[in-house]
Length: 332
Image (tube, rainbow, N blue to C red):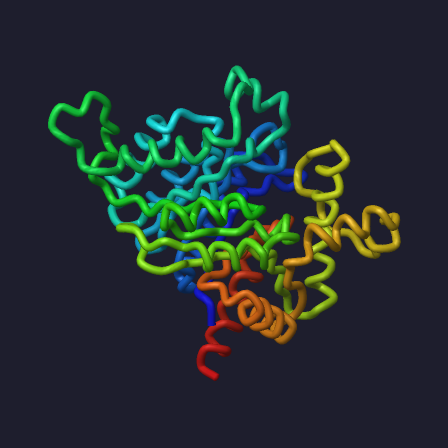
């Protein structure tokens, strides 16, 4: 069975606020730590009323301080929004405070709309070649400082931070393979090139001082409940949120609704089927079969599970059911 980890977008449900969302994130991290999940990642998004993890390193510090064992990290930091030195210092600080527990997933998308990206960067005069150079520069800051080195990451230099490349296309797969880094594919919202990207990464992988052999993690939406009907009802929150985002109306995470399929036109239904194809929704048995099928089809080393569930207690229970299913499957 593939190892299980968590991707938390710190969802802000309708009727709640960002502060409560971040407190819920800590509660989820503590819950999944007790359940035996391996990593707890948070993602950088901006100008999205339904996601509270924009200041990702700050949110991770909150989670790390309230947990003891689970690895904490970014899934990811959108590096074009930042100077590499700043990210090295932020995650170096986390590593100094929580040694041996810090991951840094790096992506090249803005994590927002173009207007907000301009506000973050002040200009958009960049090309595709800058991301690989920025990754290499960032990794250098984590090496032990050399005598006479002019610029150092303090904290950061010489500290253990596990770096990952994130992607939703084959570009990230090629870069991760070339640099010899672990690779995480964003199949939870963009699964179209998943199998091609995994194949390219494994075929082109070059061992490095950071990683001896390929290591693949894929994102998957898991909505687990006591029964299939309840799980599909919970899933309708993500479906609504995704449609709202794609139609230019981002907002807080909507409550679930009955009969959503009948309210969506053919175009919307096709959009959801394509974007959310990597989702496992149902009661315990359906979740067990779905997870096993996905792990077998991809050969992934890890599954990074995300669940945009409106009710926090239902979200906790979803991860609990998944852990129970995983333990049962491993025992068999």
